[in-house]
Image 1: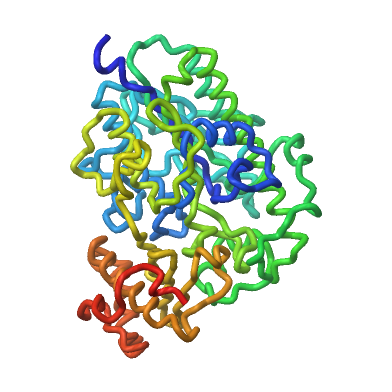
Image 2: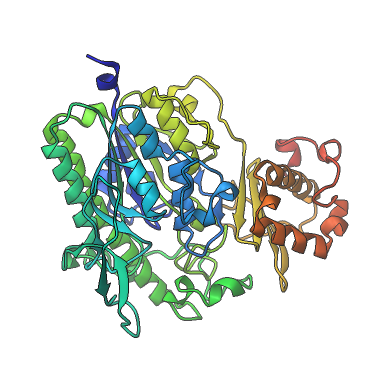
Length: 499
């Protein structure tokens, strides 16, 4: 048998707007997710997986670009609208390693990058979100040309204005989750080639509009849904940039408990329906006898607030918006384990390369965490850099989280002890005894800012100009962004920094 035939298949399951805490087996007793529970038991759950944030209101676009290119946020082109040819995509990498690569479902990062990533596919949706029952899709074209446009009136717009969409057909009345899952299952059942496959199966769910078969809606009684501890009727921070956005207007201010419970119930129903559809794909692998030969990755592209902190969307860097589920199972992955090491979704690309014996492309910025899977090394990261547009920067390190808001009308610092306050409700910034924690977090913020080339892009330049305008060097005697090292005055991460 050739080396290529010995390589495992890869099934990559990507969901849309699915935050951490939405899998039954990982602690949510109110939601039903038997197939995701199976994947949790079959492999490893990474319980501290994040995206760094985003530079676009449609956070999923840069998130998916980072995932598929392995690039960090400020190394993306046009916020991830396209992935340039100089950046090798994950599909392109596996294609070059002898895999048959298959792209099904949502692709949010340009037609050209899709075309060079896959040599097979079906029901390709080029875009961000859509009505789940009328998704405009394309058949796979080996020549990479997707030029046809059709007129379509999206039924979730208020004025029902016709728009042109890049598509060939609409499977009216077929839910997007079923459409994409059935295409994947059919490909697995009918394939005749001998090469291993890399299948990228990208769903639109549970992104709104939250519509699903009635069977799943009836599973959840809104009155029995538990509101999160950090539910608030109004935001405590002035998120003026998001207030006029589509996400925040999915529910009126003030956020009423009964309305938010309904949103959460519908969100859970979408995920349960999605879970059943994922089960169809797993069944196809079982029928072909290939389940044990397939590495399966499941993750969400970003989170969602749905009432937490008085917000509905993901245009922020609170945990509910940037922390996502990440499951990896299959050959070489220990079963039934969890790992709380900090990782990014952009680290999955090099990790899969390691697991499949493929060289990591030079263009990849991500850091492989395969050592956590094999148990032969330490976590490649001990801190995470966070950002949203030119408005927010933050860092997670040492069990703490720093969020720095800097806009023309807002200067605010938040410090949270994530171990004691996972819902981010108690800002420690002005609490006596936490000056050293804040100083150390800022030192790490500045270090990662430089490592990530933040100031070399337009968003970073604008943000740090605002920072300097506010002159935060005066706060607690902390040097500004280009200040000297604070190591001597604040020590290292550990119990000495905790109150």
